[in-house]
Image 1 (cartoon, one colour):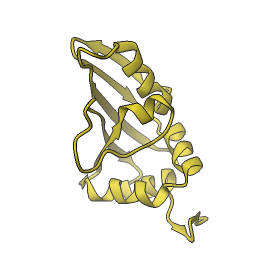
Image 2 (cartoon, rainbow, N blue to C red):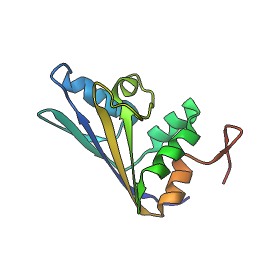
Image 3 (cartoon, helix red, strand yellow):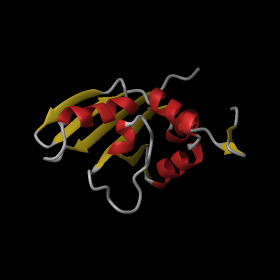
Image 4 (cartoon, rainbow, N blue to C red):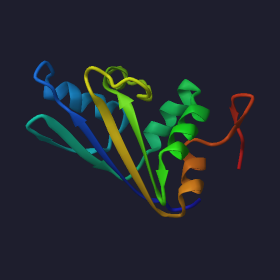
Length: 136
């Protein structure tokens, strides 16, 4: 079993029409171990494990979609993605692509220190064949 060293920085706007605690709930539904901080108009957080998020990707059977998002928005040992708040509030992963969401998005920036980005992505969103994760 590999030891992973990752840091995910999470940011989400809180609009006047929203309740801060609901935005916090949306984040913790997907990243339950996130250490959150609320400031005026924004919730930020840090988490060092994407295990629960990975479980959501597996349960929803969207591993290929996730891999595409992670690798498309990669720079060095960092990858970024955005999630729709409403889906996250319901405990679902829905990548925000195309038109910006009216409620804003949960932005996640993941830096992989060890082992390497590809290996880490293979762990949280393994490659699939016919929709089934390949065993490594």
